[in-house]
Image: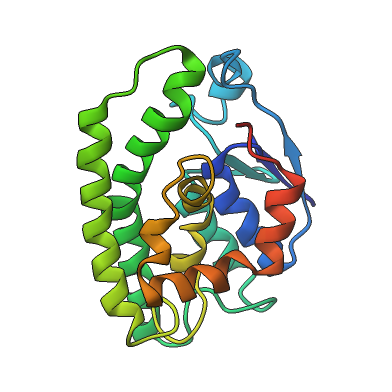
Length: 215
């Protein structure tokens, strides 16, 4: 049975999509227009009670939250494609650690930049310059930690690409693109090399081209 992914055009969903493509899993997509409030319609809330994206449906099984979907796909299809979870319990621990870092330390300031620099103008709201400044400072501190880590390992969890790396792709593409702060990566040698490697992966190129960002 083909898996179904809802709301493929949005950045958070692309975490799930790039994992599926990396693993060579067939899937179909269903568009959800957030601006029209389709995520609040009863048929959508029936599969995602919080009215958020993304959702993956696998037969009778449903799972939401992008990083949870990544883990599910990587585990279910572990025997095909690259091992994105690590080959030992220690490697798995590092993958989980850096996935949590992405979710709790990296994503919040980057999301704040995304909302204020990209979406506020589109929605007709003024950007909060104080939040932009503070978020860039926080993100810079995270990048400094990444720079130190990536001076020792090729990827965040070790010398193998993992979910921890892939999780960074969608919103970091905003950072180097419409947010206009690529220097935060380029000014850090090891972060820059890491970004060049993960952003040039065929799976990410396929996802970013086929499911074009809505901005």
